[in-house]
Length: 56
Image (cartoon, rainbow, N blue to C red; front, side, top):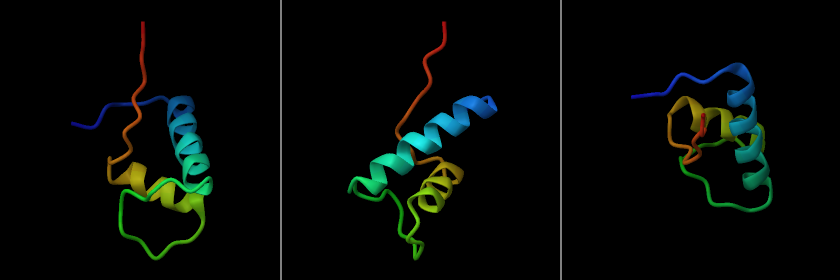
């Protein structure tokens, strides 16, 4: 089940993942895209990013 994130949490998750990809982290999906941000957006849409949000 996909958790509901605020727009700020979504931006933080995608931004952090895009940075990881730009620094050489392995991709979690097969894609023809080259831009790290586009890849991170696609990974987020497919719900495969292993980043969670901890709330109080």
